[in-house]
Image 1: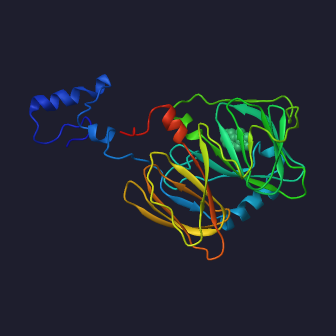
Image 2 (image 1 turned 30 degrees about the horizontal axis):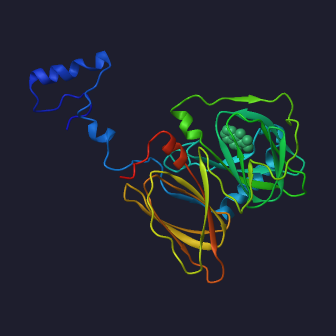
Image 3 (image 1 turned 90 degrees about the horizontal axis):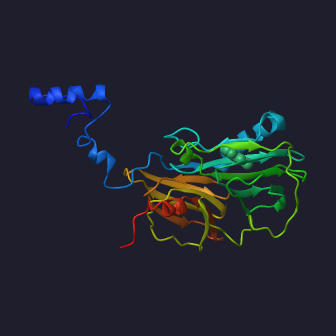
Length: 301
Ligand code: 1HN
């Protein structure tokens, strides 16, 4: 088949003239691009990829040493999908590793993007709209759309967490923007429990959902496949995940606590607990609620 509007050999002169006249009018024939527009399976651009914490942590620690508080509104190493550029970790989810040193403040701002965070190490706090939440390993904290939020660390060790935001969506709907608060901290008071903090025992759901799964010793999960894409993070345990993306590319990722991996939409996923001693816990952020809210998921017939 000919490229979009390139006359191809074997076409009549009249057809060639017809095709040649289209570009000047900024119109193109759909029929030569139809199969690309409606492919037989979802067609993510992201590839499966794992970020091993033991490999990324030294770089995050260097950033903690080299990048002062005032130089980085947020001190984050973005997890950039090898097939894409920032802000894509999957086609719809952005993830990054953030480090806040003792005594620092990540200043208050609010934005249209939705964020959730999984606390990986250390003790810190986030204040959302005046409610200050102490955060510890295993907690999920949510900053809903257009809510003031600042972060800090009143302990004597760095606090590190995984940021998860719906930033890739704004490369299509270019409507994200932010406002900085006049002071570094938005006035807040301790709030425990708080509706935006979800301790390890209680996962949540919103534009981006967070889920947690446990896999028993020696067990594997059923193979799944979903239009949602996932950023997985190992909380505890050791194992592997076998992934077959819709393009047919196969990956096997060995993971242990604090490793993070991206799974493109419509990939076949199967997790294995390879430990002889402990259960494996995987948390994941996915865009299922976003797809459902826009009616972009295959209906159950
Ligand atoms: C943001 O607000 C945070 O509040 C982290 O910690 C990462 C990446 C892009 C845009 C906003 C935060 C972000 C971000």
